[in-house]
Length: 166
Image (cartoon, rainbow, N blue to C red; front, side, top):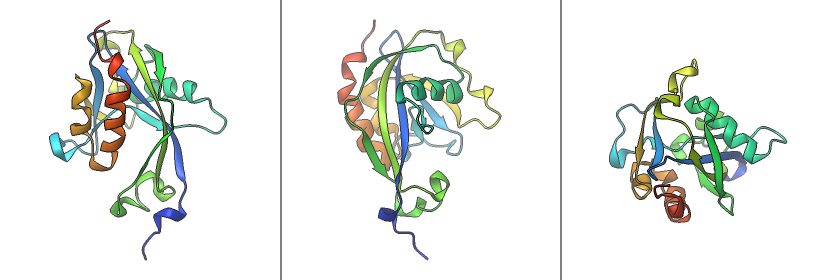
């Protein structure tokens, strides 16, 4: 039985482009893709679902706390459009608990106000990520899985003004 993706809704989601003082962006490697490098993808920005009636600005800070163990950040910009991606056919009915065709995302640029020691991937009993690093924003699309790459290309352009020391 095949699943028709267009019959499924998009999951409401927020994403965080977290910039450090050097203008580099935080990326983390998915724990379920530990050997992912380069064209294989597997590195991504923190992101997560929006709870019913939750403000996206609240959700993005909550997701940072849940996924990378710190809330030491301040919102400095919000992308002006919701961005969507569709899951590839082989992940429909599997990823996102099989209930969604992809995600509808509101993206934020944030300035990290802590130190690297404040980032704690190990605080969640089932961590989503197993490694992290700071990278130039322009490298972001090449690190992502293919179906997320178009969104990361948009973000690399839209958030370029925040990818500088400061």
